[in-house]
Structures are given as structure tokens and as C-alpha cells.
Image (cartoon, rainbow, N blue to C red; front, side, top):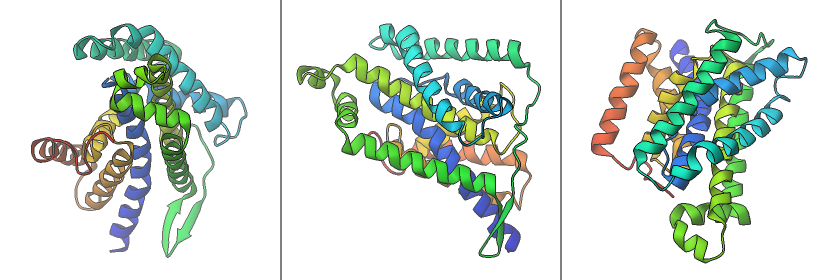
Length: 284
């Protein structure tokens, strides 16, 4: 029983990271109806960004701030170059465009770092919580995910710019008639989604080894979490990530780890069949 509870607790903590990663994906979809296939590569880029800052002597958790800033600027650049001109075209165009961005990131990353595994080698300690042992890296990463999620919620619902993002998401044409510069809002939204993806990658890098190809695994988990919570619903995406983490933690003591992904994607298909808007509803 102790092993099961510890595994579930670990699953909850890593599920918060999954939720943060899926928020970036679902925010972009919710605002502009773009399925961002560069999401996984951006997560991997966040991993290597933290690795480089840490290697330069910067505290890994202080490094999260420049990773966020770089992620935002990189997201705006992706939008302006690869998405802006085709955003009103067929969905296939944006899929191919973001997939091309993903391939560029992977290609450049492979040339710079190869596909060998890297490790940030961050010193971690263990904490005893109600008799259960957790690593400080997982706890800090989970707390960071929660804080960033609350900050995003405050931004979207309490600030003028956040309300403009929601207005463009609900009805772009009506928002433009009210004087909201939709192109600027779309660029900012893509930047925020990319920044969250890079941040989640940086947090993952504090816990696990990684390669330039590691992002694909978390991209798939982000899709599952987003569908669980309802595509376009950032709050739902967080809870979707938590559900995903709890599932992983619950089954880990009983089956081989290789079967976990099978269970997750069976769940993914079932949700699509019986709850196409997700467990918490779609775009909000």
C-alpha cells in the first residue's frame, strides 16, 4: 500500500507538469484553431535551454525566467514566419507549417547536440511528506506548474490584454470591429503557448535525462491531456494532465512501464468516442 500511495503521489506531481505542457498546446488551439505540431520540439528546446543556462553557471530555477522570455519571443517569431499568412487557410496548411518548424528544430538540435541523452545533473534532496518520500525536484517543478497556471488564469480573466485574447478566441471578426488588433493578439497568444511549452520542458529537464527527440513523447501526452480536459480549455488541460499523471502513478506498481502509454491512448480514443468535448468541455 505504501508503494502504491507513493507511486500515485509521484504521478500527481508529474501530472501537473503534463498539465502545464498541455496548456500551451490547448491555448494556441483555443485562440486560433491551430494544432501546433511543433509543440514537442519546443518542449525539447526548453530542456536544452535549461541545460545551457545551467552549464553556464546559472541556478536551474532562476533559469526558468529567461527560458520563459526566450520561449515567448520564439513563439512570436514562429507565428509571424510560419503561421500568420496561412492561419485563415485550410487546417492542413497550418499542420504542415508547424510540422516543418518541428523538423527544423529537430534537425538543428541534432546537429548541435546529436541524439545522445543529456542530463542537467541538478543536485536534489528528498522530502518526507506525511511519511511518503518525494524528490525536491519533482515538488518544486509541480509547484512552479501550479503558480504559472494561476498566473495564466489571472492574465486571461483579470487583465485587459487577457480579455482581448479571450475576445479574439470567441469571435475574431467581432473583436476586430471593437478595435482589438487581432494579429497582435494572435502573435502574443502563440508566444505564450510556446513559452509554456518551453517552461514545461525546462522543468522536465530538472528531473529526467533527455534528448532532442524527447519532446515527441510529451507532445503526445499533451494531446491526451488536452482532449481529456477539452481542447481549447486551459483549465481543463491542467486537470487533464493531473488525470494522466494519476493514471500513470496508479498502474505503475502493477504493470510494466511500457504498457502505460497503451492505457493512455486507449483512454484517448474512448474520450474521443464518448466525450468528444472532453470531460470538462471544450473551448472557454
